[in-house]
Amino acid sequence: MMGSPASRRAFLFAGSDTFGKLITEESVLNRLNWLAAIVALVFLVPVAATAESGAPQKIARGVWFMTGDSGKGYSNTAVIEMRDYLIVVDANYPGRAKELLQITKQLSPKPVRYVFDTHAHGDHSYGNSVWTAAGATTMAFKGVTEEMNRWEPTRWRNALPKRPDLQATGETDVQRPQMSISGDKLVLNDGTREVDFLFLGWGHTPGDGYVWLPADAVLVTGDAAVNGPRNKLLDANLANWPIALDKAIALAPQHVLPGHGEAGGVEILKGQKQFLVDLYAEVKAQASAGKKPAEMTIELPKPDQWWFPDSRPELRLQDIETMYLEITSHAPAGSIPHEWK
View 1 (tube, rainbow, N blue to C red):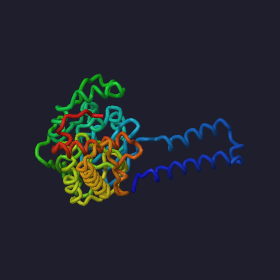
View 2 (view 1 turned 30 degrees about the horizontal axis):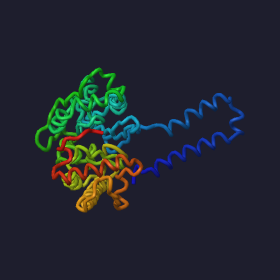
View 3 (view 1 turned 120 degrees about the vertical axis):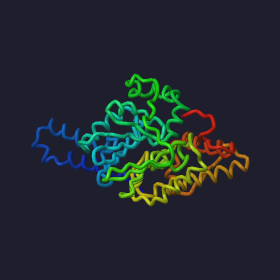
């Protein structure tokens, strides 16, 4: 699978081999100034090994995808070129938004006119004011604004002590999207490209928005589909989420650009869906047997394990607890009062 730990390790090993080759070719290095050689090594090795936010990947004509620095909590970003302007998918955190303002200028001289928040979570929307200050219009489905009105500014305030980029804004709340989309679909078509903004139902959050480029078969999903153990289920409708993903799968995308993790194909949607279906079934079976989340031993099929955070037991337990809450409450987990963590 694209973006797997094995592929990342292979890249780092290649960097290590290069380093070893450079420092063992003494016949060459002895002829150079040693200080210059050391400086060269400093620039050659750590850049490849420590870079977190990915460089822009060209997915199709005028469509770019960038992974976000997970260490800083950033989400992924898609940039779509229209005839006279650019569309950015997901505002991100303010720190990343400032970086993206500069990156988009390198991709195209056209201005960013629209920034689409796929959902209300901070890593996808807290940079809204950075974009509007630069002249863009932020937009989202109305469920995004409704979620912000429900949970903010509490979540902003809770994040503030941990995020210097939020502190630097001087703001006390997330800026709401300037354009709220009603219904299930909005189409932008300027004669050069059609962009469909789709609401396929309550999955990851009540306001989940997808961006579909029919001519290029590119689907941008936000966190409705992630590539790897990067789910947050707390605001979800876990019974309906797979149904929404079925609608996304029916579009037959060739390129799927997730909210976190590497880009890929329709296998990301199918894998995300199957993980949710299998986890739901397993938790329901054990709940029916009288077990509480802490007592459950969840064994999922091997493909599901790509989405299940084995390396972080607290997140694994949170997934199980959230499933249990929805199943035993007979209501979407996200509709029940809960704390974001």
